[in-house]
Image (cartoon, rainbow, N blue to C red; front, side, top):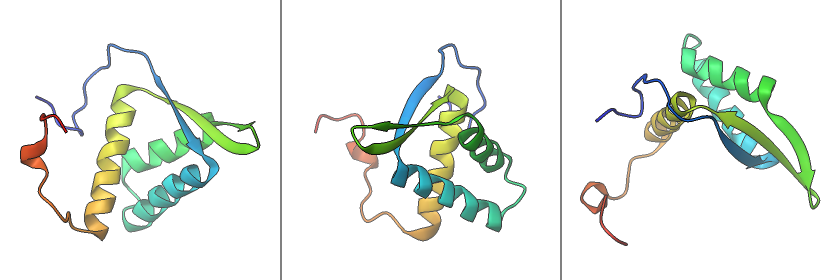
Length: 104
């Protein structure tokens, strides 16, 4: 089984991710912080560029939103970066490993 950082070709098309304005700003802020710590982080550079270049803004019922289409590899890289970021700022309060795959 491949982990979140593996580089496999996707057999599916892109998936739309819709973010509120606040969540888009938080995501880009996280990428900025990571790039300040490691300017050569290729995944962070590519993802920030993709969000800014290919994200589309719109307003839905008075709420500003952003939609961006990610391929499987990009989504995996983004999840891995978020895990690294959160892991660097906080430690898990619980070990969820043995709960995975069980009904909640």
